[in-house]
View (tube, rainbow, N blue to C red):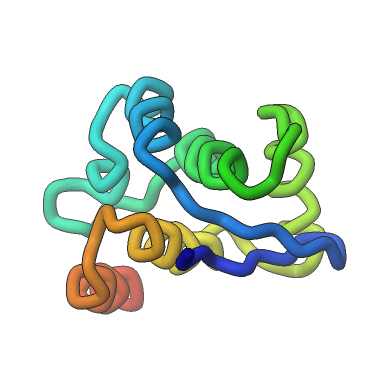
Length: 116
């Protein structure tokens, strides 16, 4: 099984979205998960959207993680001297690992992100 390794506060997590968690994510976001980047791929997702992706991607392989835990994990990630925009490639990797986008689509999105 393909997943994304993610570390925050020296704790390792495995991130992946299965169908159930994609549907839950869509409900939380009110849109298709790809839409958080905008129609042209130049929109930066909100922190709310980033944490929603993180929370739902933690569910399949990290049992017992609550939404409040996801907030704390994201805070730990930021405390590790990352920025919110550093999380954007992580989202793309999660989407690739989960079959939401292909590697080619992630590369195009990554090129757009680098322009911002």
